[in-house]
Structure formats: C-alpha cells, structure tokens
Amino acid sequence: MLYSIIKSNTYQDSLRLMQLSNALNGTDGVNRVSIMMGTRANEKILRNAGLDTPDVDGAKPTALVIVADVEDASVGDSLLAR
Image 1 (cartoon, rainbow, N blue to C red):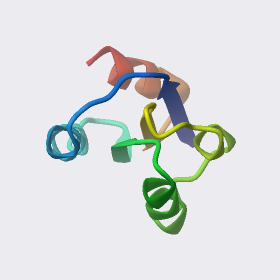
Image 2 (image 1 turned 45 degrees about the vertical axis):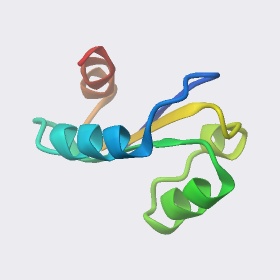
Image 3 (image 1 turned 180 degrees about the horizontal axis):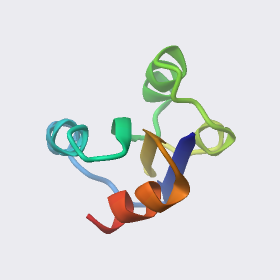
Image 4 (image 1 turned 180 degrees about the vertical axis):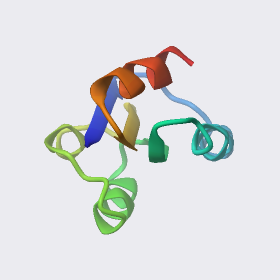
C-alpha cells in the first residue's frame, strides 16, 4: 500500500533527503520510500517510480513529501516516527 505524508513549508536539503530515503529503505515492512521536496520535477520522478498519490499532486515546492510503499498503515506510522 502507498502511504504518503505532505508537510507544508518544511524545506530540507535534497542531499539530506536522499540520505534519509536510503537509510529508511532498509526498514522492515517498507518496500521502498522516497522523501523529496514537492517540486514539479520531483512529482514526475515519484509518478514514474509508481509512488504517486493524490496528496503528491497538490504539494507545493516548499512542502516535504514522504511517500512509502509499505506492507500496512502501521508501518507507515512507525516510519514517520523515525
């Protein structure tokens, strides 16, 4: 299941977000995760990776976008806590 969270006005450096995505990809119950800023270019990347959700379409460039393909919602909640 796809689990997404949009955090408005939460700018983070792209390198840091790539490192965080890589670290979280090894988490139990997570098939893959991508954490990016809500730019149009990143929206296209998420869509091409099969990680697009309706939340992503409305994200602003200054929003932090977290999308994960997880086994169930509880995994998504624990992922956010990490």
